[in-house]
Image 1 (cartoon, helix red, strand yellow):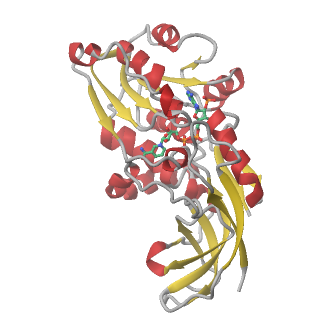
Image 2 (cartoon, helix red, strand yellow):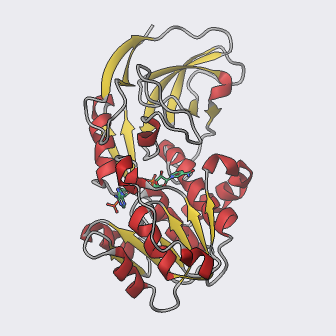
Length: 334
Ligand SMILES: NC(=O)c1ccc[n+]([C@@H]2O[C@H](COP(=O)([O-])OP(=O)(O)OC[C@H]3O[C@@H](n4cnc5c(N)ncnc54)[C@H](OP(=O)(O)O)[C@@H]3O)[C@@H](O)[C@H]2O)c1
C-alpha cells in the first residue's frame, strides 16, 4: 500500500494565504475495493478559484474542508483497478489533485484516449481553462465577427486563450491587460493581441480609454473585477456585453472588494453582464474539442506552461500564482 504525500488545509486564511494555512501530510492509501481505481498522479493543476475555496463562503462549489487535502484537476496513471473498462496503465483525469496518489470510485475519473498532445494540456488548453475561454466567448458573450474584445489577465491561462480564440473566431480588435512589461510583450508579440495595457504602470481607467479610443469595446471578458470592471463599464460601447469569469483581484483579500461608482453606465448603455461557470457548459465541450484540437494541430494557438517539480513545491507555486509571478498555466509535476 503506497504512502502518499498530500497538501492539507490546516486552517482558513484570515486575509492573505501563507504557508501557515497549508501543511504537507503523509497518509497510507488502501488498495482499491470493487468499483475503485488507485491512481499515481503525474501532474496537477493550480488554479485561482482554489483560493476562495479556502474561505468558508458560499460559491458555485463547496469550500475546502479544514483538515482535508485540497482538491483540483489532476492527470494520473492507473496503477490498480477494480473498474471494468479502466485498465492498469491507462491515463485518467479527475479532481483529486494536490496529492501523490488518489483512490477514487470509477465514476469520479475520466479515461483519456491516447493522443499526440501532452497530458498536461488536459488541465489547460484542452481542459477546464480552455473550455472557460471558449464558452465565455461563444456561448455567454455570443462574440460576433468584427466585434472588439477587452480581456483582463491576458497573460494568464484563460485570458491568453480567450484573446487568441477571439481572433480565430473572427473578432476585430483585441485588447488585453497584464501586470508587467514582460507580460505585455508576451501578449502583444507572441499572442498577437492588437493592444496591451500594463495595468500596474498607469490607472486602468485612463489606459483602457486610450487603448479603446478607436472603436470602443463590444465585449469585456473579466478575469479580474475591481478597477478593471469599473474601467470596462466606462469604455464599453452601447449594448456591450460583459462575461464575468472571475475577480482574482480580491481573491486573496476579501476586504479589497469594491463596488464601482459608475454602475449607471450599465443602464445608460444598456449593457448585459453575465456570470460564467465552466461546468454549466458541458454541452459546448464537443465544439470546443473539435475547434481547439484543430487550432493546435494547425499551430494557431500559443500555449505556455509553468511546471513546478514535486508536491512540496505546490504551496509556494500557488502563492506565486496569486501574486502574478508566473506566465502560463501553472502545473505541478510529480
Ligand atoms: N468561472 C469559471 O468557471 C472559471 C473557470 C476558470 C477560471 N476562472 C477565473 O478566470 C480567472 C483567470 O484564471 P486563470 O486560470 O487564467 O489564472 P492564471 O493563469 O493563474 O493567471 C492568473 C493571473 O491573474 C493575474 N492577477 C493576479 N492578481 C491580480 C490583480 N490583483 N489584478 C489583476 N490581475 C491579477 C496575474 O497576472 P498579472 O501579472 O497580469 O496581473 C496572474 O498571473 C480567475 O479569476 C479565475 O477564477 C473562472
